[in-house]
Amino acid sequence: MKVTLAMKPTDTSFIPIEAESIVPKNFLSGTDFSVWRGNRELNLDEVFLVSVEGEADRPEDIEVVILGEDTFRLKRVGEYMDGGKITVLGDIGMHCGNFMSGGTIEIHGNADGWLGREMAGGTILCRGDAANYCASGYRGGRKGMTGGTVEVFGRAGHFLAENISGGAVTVHGDAGDMAGAEMRDGTLIVHGDCSRPAANMKGGSCYVYGTAHAMLPTFKKIGTVRHEGRTLIHFTGDIANRGKGNLFVKDYRYLD
Image (tube, rainbow, N blue to C red):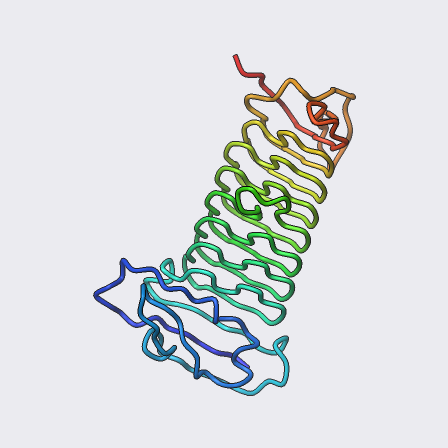
């Protein structure tokens, strides 16, 4: 089954839409459900032109395609998603893929903050940039992402994979400050530069194929290793927290 949701033009394009109901499994029983625009509950067909092709007996056989000029206003798309696929032909708003445990979300544009927040499984592909807190947990939480895969083909913002406790995150561009902060397990790979990576990490592996700026002094240098055809400098730590994590960087600069 293919469900196409084309956003209708509106004069209230500045108001975000809470769209946690947009997950493949909900379309097994039709399209008669709602989203919220501000404090107004709206039927799906009041916000989208809805088209359904084919049939399905399980979420894994459903693809939801979202398109339109204002897709960046959609928040919480794919929340608690456990199967199937969502394809966004544009940008997407905050909290996409919250608590996701299965299936695939592919975003052809940029993603706003908290992409894949506390996800437990499945795959998120972002063809553009991801804003702050990608694959992280909420402030004060003890766990961020626990499983699954997030791949960002552009750059990522600050606090990428904060509190990550499992799964794998790959960013093909640069990342911002504090990538992998409070990391407990899992794998984080940044192909570009970032600053203060893996601060206070307790476990897991963080790879920076570019330069780690403002490198924290609380990591112990071990030597060099070969990884994916690259020579990387191997550190363990963060020893400020008795951490047993592994940080690998191509180059690093301490804060002046």
